[in-house]
Amino acid sequence: MERVSRITGALLAVGLSCPAFAQDAPARYNLQAPVTGVAEQIHDMHTLMLLICLVIFIGVFSVMFWAVLRHRKSRGAVAANFHENTAVEIAWTVIPILILLGMAWPATRTVIEMKDTSNPDITVKATGYQWKWGYDYLQGEGEGIRFLSSLSTPREQIEGGAPKGEAYLLEVDRPLVVPVGKKVRVLLTANDVIHSWWVPAFGVKQDAIPGFIRDTWFRADKEGVYRGNCAELCGRDHGFMPIEVHVLSAEKYTEWVQQQAAAAGAEQVSLAPQSPAL
Image (tube, rainbow, N blue to C red; front, side, top):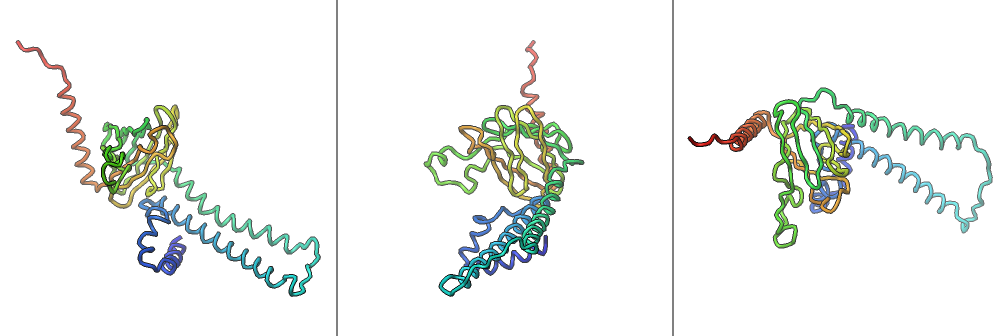
């Protein structure tokens, strides 16, 4: 896969030599930069499939145009008349099988790894609502933390009364926070209709279905802010249901957990019944 990436990088460097085009190409014409091992495999597999399709396209159309030009009627060409050529039949059966096997091997390996949710460091339950996400930290550091995550893009931007922000419709009031380098298992369900939790940079896309628990996982290798959205048509405000994940260092994540615990404790104190004055 690393060799494929190097070859693809060289091809893109030649094909995208125009500075303006090269600047916009990664964001506009390719997948998001991967930050997990699974996402990197998906990226490399995507590149490999495109290269295989490109080679097939060039080979098939080269032979077709060569046959049309070389054996056209104006040159006096006469169509060959043959039947049951065993060698040709074997070739056009075996070659596609080998191509499919070459494509299936990395795809199968990636799918198996995508489904391996065993031994997580942190388990988070994500519940889809119309139209927001609810997060419950069930296992690992931060256990017991729970909150709702809703769109925070100002209404003025949505209605066209203000310039669009950099994270327009992809920003939330309370993001999911996880530590870098830790395996995070995400349990997915929904409260009303089918939703879908999709973060392209993680290589994660899993449906959240009412009455069912499905799971997926990711391990982010780089700190940063990563965004996605609901990828299932879930109703009127489907386009206003973003996902925002903050990947922090271990120290900053611990600080965040402590802040959440302190805030929860203060809220419980404020809600506790007061003793009547004597």
